[in-house]
Length: 121
Length: 115
Image (cartoon, rainbow over all chains, first blue to last red; front, side, top):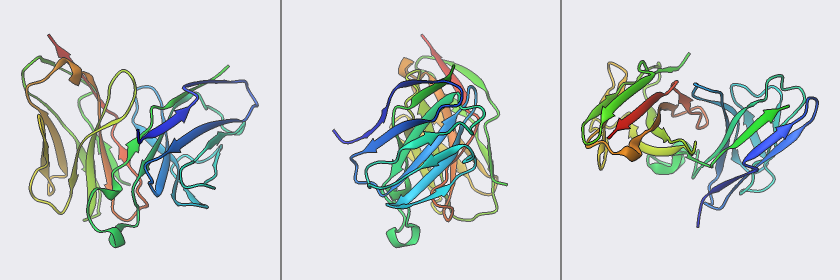
């Protein structure tokens, strides 16, 4: 089955610890994204990557880091610098984000993984 | 700043009836996409429907359809023949064409379908 997997489903972190959330996709998508969801709110973009070995900050990148060494993987590290990390984290991917080259179509639609719930103890 | 507003925090509908969820957005862009996503209690985000801004025809997907009014910057979702499985949080989202695929979400509308 093709899809996006995130692990773990639940994660607990102690104060001052770094933790890494996994996101893997086997859809052969070029672009991948990380969002944060707080209770009663919509999603906010943390980081995104359009191609391997390249990524950009989103709206709330402070306290987070990412890597994109492989096309199918886009792990997110929540560092101790993130002051309020308790939230639900969602990873997404899309076929292409090269806009005009790909033309209009379904290439920009983002598909989401099942999410990771991070709680700081 | 580009924003998405969903003015109805909660809505309810009887099974088999029709309900419309509202969404407005603010942008100076001319080219963009609009989406409705559904988040059931499992919290998995599921694409419901998408609309390209350059298309005048409203998108439809089975029981789901949109009313896209570009001049008014309005993008409402109509669910016909509501089913119990439609119970979920619904998010409207906006994607400008030239900003790296960034999705901007509204706050969501919690829809309850009652038997």
